[in-house]
Image (cartoon, rainbow, N blue to C red; front, side):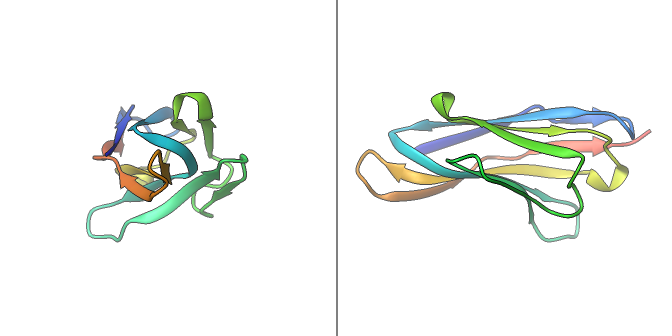
Length: 120
């Protein structure tokens, strides 16, 4: 019922920047929280940044000061601006969106993921 689509991944050199986007669509009444996760090969998926409807943000220590999460409530879209990228940032990045549908039921949906590779 809710579609979540990420975009913006790719190959970048160490020290470079990328901006990821995530758009949610469907019969959504309100999105209460949006977050970015990543999963590197052989590792568990980890939450790296989140933002609430009020704009409160939280970051994992590994990305604090380098990544910035922002949302456009009118477009049901969340962004992740990544700067000073390091090889250890290489992973598949996933967007998670949570909120309420028009039917008042709660939802939580994942995107399909977008690959970010940091390499010289």
